[in-house]
Image 1 (cartoon, rainbow, N blue to C red):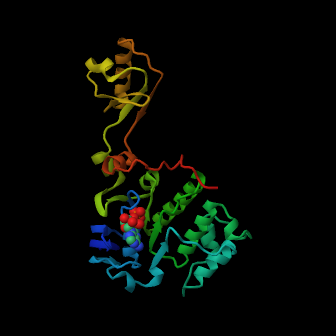
Image 2: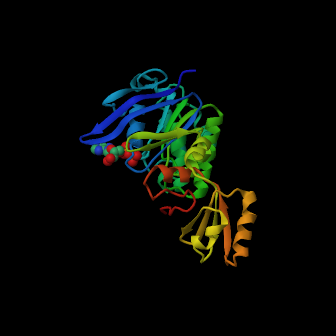
Image 3: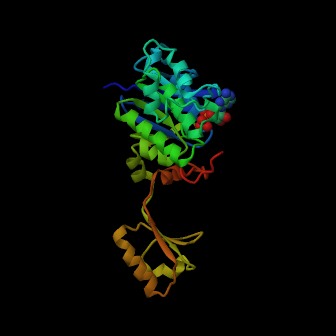
Length: 306
Ligand code: ADP
């Protein structure tokens, strides 16, 4: 099976800025690929090169084995980050407008139902919640029933419930066989939706693989965080790798069955502690290990604009 999306050694410069520096990528039919990376890493530029709205300075891009400009419009869906449809349209009018651009569009009411927006609603787009607006935009991007969908940060600025509703939309699309290329700042989103994740930093793909592969390779070990006033020296003879944290100590490389042993070590040394929390590494740890971006976004705790 030949890949649906290919980037071959793609380089793109803006003046002296090297936005993409030799990016190689291949995405298979039906795959959900998530591109993650800090601001300025080149995600938008790569999305634009792949969709044909930017031309690489070097290297080549192919969609369905052809240059992006030669791909039939109805095979491709695109939801850019800054998609900003007219405010004074109802969801049905809006999606109907986009459906009207194609010869053989999907049924508008069915599309709105697919994304969980009531087609009968008379509210203008501008008065919908952020989540409803984004779901309506997804419906518009699906008007031509694309087999390849590009979505750039689809859930940014949406509250956690709205984000989860959109995740279900993308999961349904993936289950129906749509190939999805997604950029996101939310590691939980990439971990949940993506078959494969690529981490872009300074214009280069520095790691790619399934979320599990990336976590195994770069995420580090499971650890036990202990809320205590003790210092690593207090446990120096216990045989653990211990480091100080803001709230106390982190005991590294602890499997669930080792937790009792750690508790014993604390108690036998008369070290007081308030609470324990065990955690496995996830994609966020991979991101932090491979980038110097301190501002990784937690999908549930981000402040959302009203
Ligand atoms: P991301 O989407 O990961 O935040 P971008 O692709 O927007 O990254 O940007 C990558 C780099 O290219 C950044 O340094 C950005 O400032 C620069 N850049 C992007 N677009 C332009 C442009 N039109 N003109 C000049 N520099 C740009």
